[in-house]
Length: 315
Image (tube, rainbow, N blue to C red; front, side):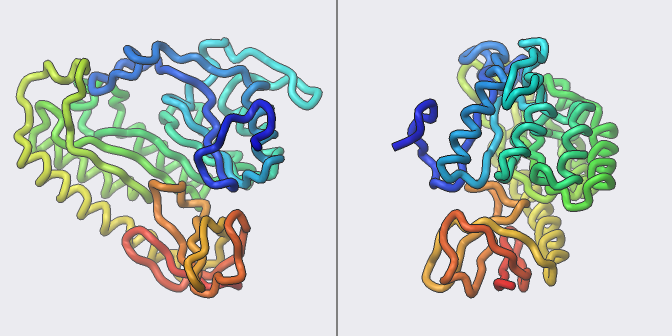
């Protein structure tokens, strides 16, 4: 039975999603979340932290912080202070991460817009207090397409920020998602996107061919991209990213890393490192992992790599 205040978990016992807000203040033209769920509504920080405590007490080893816009957490509450463990805590992303780091679990951040104050959580990552992992939804790299999407369009600034984050936290894993074939996207603008991913060298990337969503304003934009062109661009994008991902993973061969075991398959433990969110990223296959169990941490040495996954042995 779950602890009071914690709903029925649909994930394995050792990790859990921690939702910190609902809704979104952005008005991206390809998205209908604001019309469905309204503007951003943040949960008070003490409420989030009490849930997190109960999850960790119940055996959770990894907390995955989620929302529609994690960086904006608390702006609607004017970053109000609430008491937790006898001291005031602000309803704000960095303050939340500082508090979560006290629980002794892995803390992984998803859907973080690259606002300037994200630099503060990079410091926490560099200090080993939360996982050095950022999921940042960039969507494109052409300033004109980003403007049509109603997304932040300062691509050069984003690239500079990525480089600064990596300088401050060399082990940082960066994940992002992109859309190709957005209405009006030219071959040159798609080329700008390819140039960006080459320059940014992101670790984990998802990409989707644009598909109209009922009620989204992007449906009314002119110059739709033909389906065949969308899918050809998607294949080209993923081929470039596969090469980048494979090279970045090969660079880990020989390194010692910590992993969290998800399951046992015969003599092999299927695990994840700090660089791997469940279900969307890669895995670490530990060849001699029969003595391990789900939810257990282990130190391993990386022995091989593919485009998405690592092979390892126990130390």
